[in-house]
Picture (cartoon, each protein chain N blue to C red):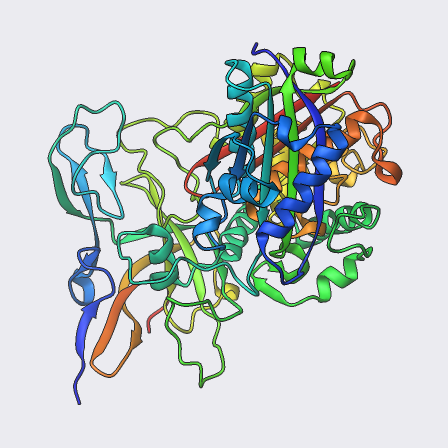
Length: 396
Length: 148
């Protein structure tokens, strides 16, 4: 087991389509997290920014961009990118600095300003870039991959579009309770079923939108937290940032093909399952110890997949677990009580940080109407394209 | 005016009619197959590294999954914005001999309603788009029961 770090503060800029710069969203979130922690920015020894590829050069050096916006004060800086997993990499970097003694208080910030419509690759003719190739050769947008996964579940596990719609119904009900969510309206199964098909079998309301938003955390050593007067802070007990193992046999964004398993037998465990297992091992806990989970529901079908990958149920048991109400607020293991990506839309580098913000508020018992009673242990999980796993386990 | 037929990506497929094949590479040391082709290094972490030799992939495979694009994909996908968008199916195909899954567009006219997981399909030459000088060619998957 690795030593823990304290979460002193959490803050967000509400998700939406605000039409302003990612710098503004990140700075609002950072100021909120610092205020929540009761820490003066000038006291922060290190800042870690989760990059965005949509903000020009300032997005590639997000750590410095946010440091400048908050007012240069000489802090150590790092900027990291891991697609959807960028936020967890930022948390991981901050934790490593704290545990190694390089810094005692670290500010982690991620923010994005998303375009209208599909995400698209960077410009230019780049035939050596798999992300460019999948668009040029196949027109394979992100939702088409979600559609492939969903259809595969229907064929292998017998899931139905009605099962998928119930994920949206659940998450929309919880998002309606969250002031930081972009979509705050309950949705019925009929509304999902009557929304337009985007990538068969998935409809518009099965697929998460792209959003503007920002999230930030103030992390510190346990020793600093005690001196600061935080006697019983939320603690981060594990951060998983694993990569796949060859041969990777599940078609992953942005790839056009999987690895070949002809000369090396694939591991029994999928990449996504390995993301959670690494976190559980590091934390010394298992799925039965969880009070709640935040998972990356890029699509409704993918949320069911995460139930299985996190070990909340056996393979193929996701739809049944949902139907039993186990993953709703008040259930045995509530999932995405924040409302999830379903209610937020994806603000890529902010999203994994926002997941940890939600865990923090839940573990503090300050999540208001969406509070999971007696929450003690939470996990969040996601996967970034190009082979980035991420999971964080927080406890109190 | 006649257009030049040019593969949308060089070296990924070749041949005409029944001889059309996707082209991958195989490591001479560990026999791992790569598509899209690897020409510099074998990616098997347990392999000391062999020569990567071009190999044609199996013509036929089985549908691992499928979906479609109901909305026009963004650039660099090329489509005529003057015309109403016509959805096309995408099929992920499992090749048994190579033990890998390859994505591709379905032949025009085959929609998701025509497909099932496990169905046999074969690779055929196709056209991705045309501009003033060039017909950009690609591969398509076609159910083996269908003749187009």
